[in-house]
Image 1: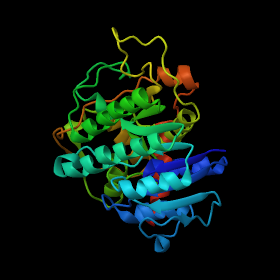
Image 2: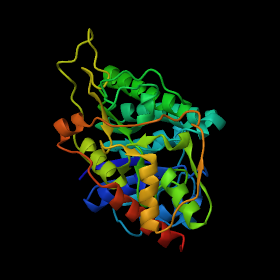
Image 3: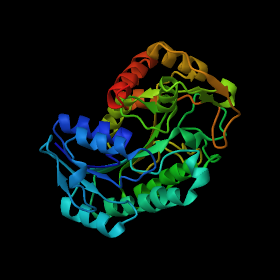
Image 4: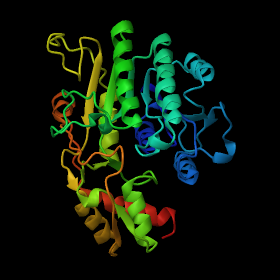
Length: 351
């Protein structure tokens, strides 16, 4: 049993991960700022599922879960270095999984400062807290968006990712660079996880599956960007969580064969590693829409739109490192995952 801090536990992936680690016997402290980037009822609903009552939440106050005796939650911002450091000093975490971030590619065009505060300032606060409190392993969320203008597919962690096309992507690439610095200078084991289009029950309301399902059930048109000429490596949330769990249990030790004359961007002589976690099976956007229509039993009215700034036309994860190192490959089918999401959506919204 390990004592783990998971940031972002009112969020989509953090909520599912906290449940998995708690169910296997880990002690977990969850942290989230609970901002209003999207429908806060979904965030409070996730917290309630893990025994955290919204009426008990006060800023910087640890709350005991009514469902899991080994789970506590605290509302805190990553930018709040003073309270974050105090939490680390008191709790003495074995491992940290940082999933808290300002998410969203398109929103980064509207509110860039939110990404600097949470994803840059907040992340260096996490690194500093891990460094000074002898944390044994920091795992953190990166994103497939770091691949930017890269057109070589499938996307590999050995590829250059120096051409992001959104501030969100740039902030995630910055996290990887900052983590390497701390791994190199201070011997802090860090693992970055590039997630590919995560979906499933309790998913984010700003993501395509949620938006499409809501619009179709409400009898409103869906917006299909780039005239439908897009594909995504949709990855079911349970597969993402399994990948994170395996990574968390296996801190990197450093790549002895790494060479500065032919540097591999995904590893280092330092205890540093980057993994893709994706389904390794891209789906065309129109096939994705068809799957949703089939599960709902209702056809969508479609509005075909141009490509949005910051978006890429296709994503496709090379997960060979995940297979080689951790004997794992995501494999949940789109039909199953979409069905599980819609089952949850109908229940949560009484649809």
